[in-house]
Amino acid sequence: MPFYSMDELSAWQIVVGCNFASLGDAGLIVFAYVIASLAANGCYWLRSPKQRSLTVFLGTGQIVPFALKFVALRVPWGWNYPERMLILLGIGVILPIMWGVVPLLAVGLTACSLREPPVDQ
Image 1 (tube, rainbow, N blue to C red):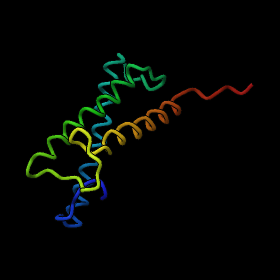
Image 2: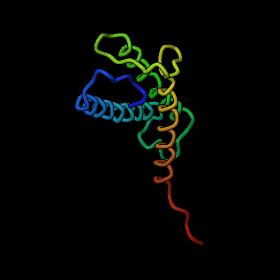
Image 3: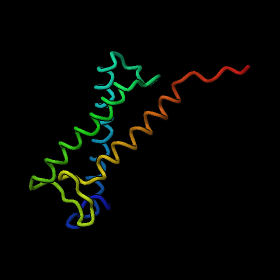
């Protein structure tokens, strides 16, 4: 895994850790969606995303993992970045990129699939 240093872990430990991280990412997307739904006063905000709900969704998706990674990099049982990782504010730059690009694509594709199809004339 190129984003974290896992040299001391076995292949099984890496698989288990990555699976838990994937579950955490999925839970974070659900959490960010719920927070954005509260800000939009309804859970149907994806039908026509407004700037406020999208900002809350992306902001939640940036703040929560930033805080978690900030802690995980400073505790004995946490992880480290490899030497070649670009670090910004103590966190690898992959975090804002991942939580900027991937959720925007997910929201865009979901919003597109929820819109009414054009009526043939």
